[in-house]
Amino acid sequence: MNIAMKGNWNYPTKVFAGPGRIAELPKACESLGMSRPLLVTDTGLKDSPMIRSALASLPNARLFAEVRGNPVAANVEAGLVAYRAGNHDGVVAFGGGSALDAGKVIAFMSGQTRPLWDFEDVGDWYMRADPKGIAPVVAVPTTAGTGSEVGRAGVILNEETHQKKIIFHPQMMPAIVISDPELTVGLPAHITAATGFDAFVHCFEAYCAPGFHPMADGIALEGMRLIKEFLPRATRNGGDIEARSRMLTAASMGAAAFQKGLGGIHAIAHPVGSFFNTHHGLTNAVITPYVVVHNREAIAGRMNLLARVLDLPKPGMDGVMEWLLAFRKELGIPHTLADIGVTLDNPEQIGREASIDPCAGGNPIPVDAPTLERIFRAAVKGELSLAS
Image (tube, rainbow, N blue to C red; front, side):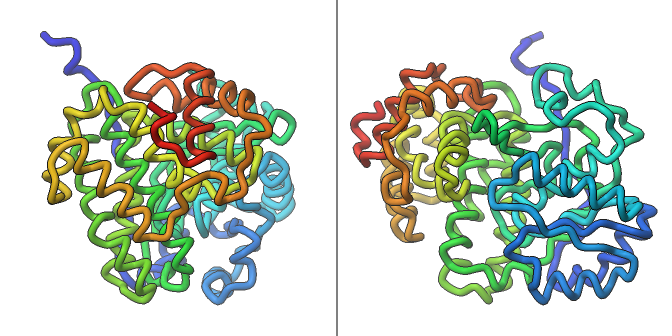
């Protein structure tokens, strides 16, 4: 038997997909035994009509909206105080990736006695948790990017160390997802582009990650095809329900696919976001071609199939690279990290932090701190040749 054909695979959860499905939120909560859910969202959505409507449909729910763009431990702690004070019995995580991550972690921590960082995604640390202390979650995504609605982890910033930590447990997966494209219609074009490109990066890095996982590869390929077709439409016309629907699907597909692994794009983006408070999806989008150039030798063979799936005019690695740069430009993605406020004040620290990020281990070519620092410098300066 070829040992390379072995793998441990998981698939996501129950998803209510389609326009208008948010009307089923009360039914979803009821089916999970939630009678007093805590609705967790971010500060930007706090006063939005969709949040007011959701709360009106859940008479016994209470709102917690103290989640920032890159959620920190203090957000989780404040959420736990609200959860316990309200005697809640579940969480509705409602919003973009930050709100979904924070909501999932609040639900996970609601019945734990150990501190948050004891459950970082390291080895078998998740076994420290009491599974009976994990509250149920209904996830309602309002952006199409992170795919956190079908993920078993939450990314939380440790402000003391400036490190983004992945809190993981298999039972952190939301029990029900409501994937309603109508909730994403009001998303501005630049956020649509940035979050959508985040979904593309999830698919792309998963597809390029080493290891045998043909189901993840297949999901990643179809996810990238959907994003190529529908992200420009969703960006140009926010009311295009078909495009919005397909992008929500592609975002969930990216999160399903990256069970196989991520890589250098995320490894660099995490410390950049921690130190410069940049938007995660936008940071990924800017960094992508620089990491692709570095990985060229290892991924060139896979680009032949990707170019065919995307129906590109030029085959192989060159065709994918040309399209990737043009796609970013079409979506209004800046070419350099400097364009989004990132400086070279601490490049050595970014390289070190990137090298210990869990995503670094999934890069197709092994990377160390000096290598990741070099790629980071290239991305700040906008010089692709420096990344190779």
